[in-house]
Image (cartoon, rainbow, N blue to C red):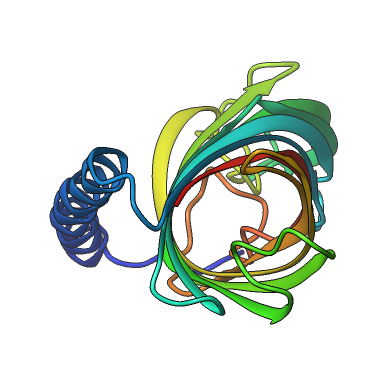
Length: 239
């Protein structure tokens, strides 16, 4: 059985992350508005994405979109702020609950859980051009993404049968819906080429590395998220 944090610790973490979330969102919105208001040395971007979850017992596909504002400090270094959201991912698992006493019949209750997990994320960071530059109009660009994000998750589990926890052991995950928060380190590598008149096409591969954690009875694993994201979109340069 997994060992969960105490109720006091759990609520303290939620309160702390809620406060961090408010400050993070305010800073993100301020940066986005500032980016959109000052055209010189800025870009706006949008893309579509496909996400694959690699977490054990939580494998699924999801589609998403990212909206991003950028400020170009110099030809090689760009700061970004993005908001991304994804469709719910669906997955199933087979679980068992063992009877606590002789009254339980059957002694082992087998059932299926139907689960969904949905991601929304905000991130701040930098794009560094290894090859080319943000305003390159002659050849292609190769860049890296390094950032810090706040991941908002909505987890939901439904049992195929009712489990009486008075007579059966508590299953690995609990039924119901829960909103969860994680901090992430955001990494990526991308390719970009100009289409014309300050419009660029880009595609990149991204991942989120868990930067904070606490065990939740609504997740199969504490190692969430483990994802690979492939994105393709358009960047419009104001220079």
